[in-house]
Structures are given as C-alpha cells and as structure tokens.
Amino acid sequence: SPGSRSKDSLDLRDIFIAVKTTRKYHKSRLQLLSQTWVSKAKEQVGRCFNGLHLTGNEAVVSCVLFCRWFCHMDDDNYVILPSLLELLSSYSHTQDVYLGRPSLDHPIEAAERVKMKFWFATGGAGFCISRGLALKMSPWASLGNFITTAEKIRLPDDCTVGYIIEALLEVPLTHTGLFHSHLENLQRLPTDNILQQVTLSYGGFENRRNVVSVGGAFSLAEDPTRFKTVHCLLYPDTEWCPHKTRH
Ligand code: UDP
Ligand code: MN
Image (cartoon, rainbow, N blue to C red; front, side):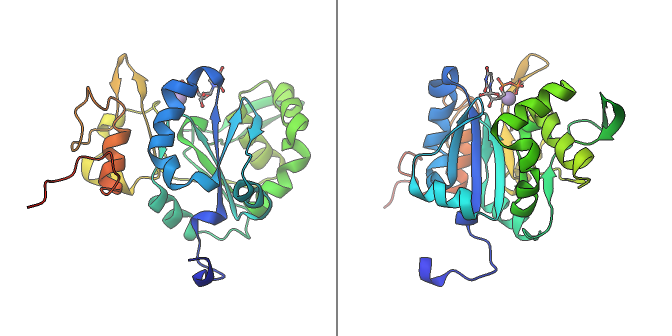
C-alpha cells in the first residue's frame, strides 16, 4: 500500500519503462505485451512511437518527473518485473548507472573528429539508466538533440545512447547477462533459470524459431513467443492462465 512505502526500498513505481514501438506492430506485438507483463506495470509504462512519447496517464507523467530509474525496452521484450526490481535494487539510483547487455564483445569505434571507443547496450535486450545519469544526458539526448547526436556519429539509437554515456559523459556500461535479445540463441537459456532473467525476447535466429524453451500452460502453436507461458509461471492466478481443476 502507498503508506507502507519505505524511503530506500525500490518499488515498481520508481521505474519508468519506455517501450519502443511502431504503428505497424500495434496489433502483433503490443497486444501481447498488454496482455502479459505490461498489465502488471501499466502505470509505469510509456510508449514511444519512433521516439515520440505517448504517456497520457498521471502516474506515468509523475514517474517521468520523479522516477529513480529509466528503462528502455523494445516491443518484442518480455520484462520479468520481480527480477528487474531485484537487479535495480542492487545499485544506487543516485550514482551514474548504465546497465545492459553489451552488444558486441568489444567496444565500437565512432569516427567523429577524434576516434572514440565505447561500449553500448543492445537496444533489443533493453537497458536501464539511473535518474542522475539520465539528467546529465539531456544536453545530447533531449528530443531534437538526440537526433542531431545520432546523425553526427551516423549510428543507430542504441549506439548513440552508448556514445553519449560512455564516450561523452565517461560513465562505463555495467555489463549484465540478464537482458536478452533475439540476437542470441534464446533456446540455450537454461529452462530452470528463465524466471530469474530480466528481459526475454523472440524472433528470427538462423532462420529457426528463436524462443526460450519453457514448457507449461501453452503449446508452441498456442504461444509461439512463449511470453504467455512465462507470464503464467510468474502469475499463475491470471484469469486466462489454465488453472488446475479444484476438487
Ligand atoms: N521499430 C520502429 N520503427 C520501425 C521498425 C521497428 O520503431 O520502422 C521498432 C520496433 O517496434 C522494435 C524495435 O524498433 O521496438 C526493433 O525492431 P525489430 O525487432 O523489428 O528489429 P530488430 O530487433 O531485428 O532490430
Ligand atoms: Mn527485435
């Protein structure tokens, strides 16, 4: 309850989660998220349609103003909220923290004036930034400025975030293996560790169906992304999850 909220322990309400999407995925991707993890974090989730923020709910607006953490997800990510809370609780939001899965096994080089090397977190796996750091980014990252910065280094948006944080602000990426995109082989994630991960994804990998291997409520045909199955393992009381018959 709101009254029992302690000053230091992290709450879902301390995290703003932006989901990047585009109109063409509204049906195919967003609907699945709304049914699953977003339903547990409705007030924390803002949508950004190609960079334009659509919030439109008071809780989200106040979170943008006061949140301790800003996380950025793609519309093909499942966010395991208890794991996200636990992970962020182990860092201080008052320090400069940039947390994500490194996109490459080496830093990338930007050839803008002087060559600079920097790490960046894979956008497709999601990443999180502490409030203090997010504020420091604003000269390069607020609306129009972000596009100018991205055009200057001619790299995609997730690389641009890494460039601003690592190269310009000199804050190192904190590497985590708990965020996952479909660039990796998701079938290789150990089944008994899946609920301890922070993000999951699905998609094409070497032309095979690249999804986490988790059994349970739904078959592959019923739940091709496995997001519903994961959701029912996390929240078995959800009304559309198959329930064991009571005697
Ligand atoms: N996306 C977008 N506009 C587009 C295409 C994609 O905003 O024209 C978003 C999409 O909704 C998703 C992210 O960019 O959040 C990555 O898209 P996708 O998963 O299709 O590509 P990949 O992960 O293979 O780069
Ligand atoms: Mn993707």
